[in-house]
Image 1 (cartoon, chains in turn orange, red):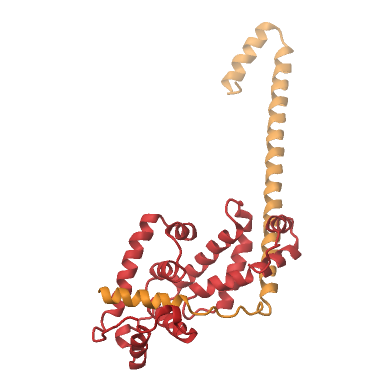
Image 2 (tube, helix red, strand yellow; image 1 turned 90 degrees about the vertical axis):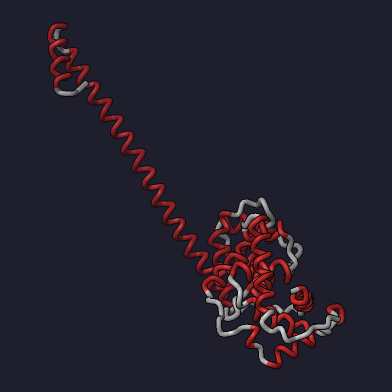
Amino acid sequence: MKDRDQELQHLYSLGRRAPAREVPGMPFGMETAVLAHWRAARSQRAENGSLVRGFRWAALVACAAALLAGMMQNDELTAFSNRFDPASRVADSAITAGFGYE
Amino acid sequence: MPDENFDEQNCLRRIAGGDEAAARELLRHFYPFVLKLVRAHLPRRGNEEDLTQMTFIKIFQNLGQYRGKVPLAHWISRVTVNTCFNALRAEKRRPEWRLADFDEETSEAIERLAQVEPDVASPDDAREAREIIERLLAQLSPDDRLLITLLHLEERSVPEIRALTGWSAGVIKVRAFRARARMKKLLSPNETRTLVFA
């Protein structure tokens, strides 16, 4: 096995000395193909980015609308409660509690 | 690297901004570097042009992930080696060739090369040795092949291989031990040859 080891080391040593092949110019069409892929990937990313941005805005608007609606409902209930005397308010409160408003 | 004055950071900034001229510059600058790496790790039946192109496509696809923690050339080496490694994995091993099936001519070549002193070896001898090694490497698994190429043909250190492949030092050492044993085994069936080294 020692011989084999030596033999391999010798082959590696010779193999490392193999002259590097000349680097030719870039093949015709490679640059165009690579850059075309790059452009396509960029525009895809941009599209995805605008979609994500769109979703983000839609989510923000939905949250704001929900908040606004909640506030308006709360105002309505408060205004409704304030229109009556204390006894009616107690009764209203019991009714709304029964309907699950509170 | 052909151009020492290549301004990497500026080029990367321009590419991030979508400058096509900068992308072209990067491609032209690293083309010889990537091609040499691809040649060193090319599957036997692989096409170096196709693999180089695929490597550059991956480089541009993932350029946004480059954080500048290592030199760009190192990062590009890693992408290239991984691309070649995947191509090697896709290529099945060639069971049709074994060293035991060496023809007379190849056996004679190995015996003759054993007499050649590496320091005075002619380019033809070196090329012949390289060809024999590559035929042997084609018998190994992609992991073993990559490891033997990096360790013995490119003489990379374990930390360098670690950086290129992402394997741990322990994995590299164990795999290297097994890969060397497999290479020896590939040479072993032909026990009739007696070798005298120069």
